[in-house]
Image (cartoon, rainbow, N blue to C red):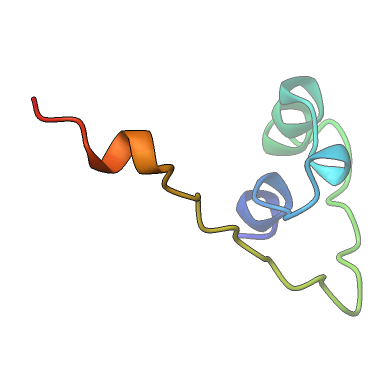
Length: 57
C-alpha cells in the first residue's frame, strides 16, 4: 500500500522511478518513509472557449 501511495504522490517530481518501485517490490531496498503531512491535491477545471461551444459534430 505504501508503494502505491508513493507512486500516486501529487507532486510528480516526488514520485518514484519504475526502478525504485521494482527494487522495493523485490525486497532489494527498504520502503520509503512517508512524509508526516502530504500536500493536498488540486485540480484545475479546463476553460471552454466560445469556439468550442459553437462546434457541432
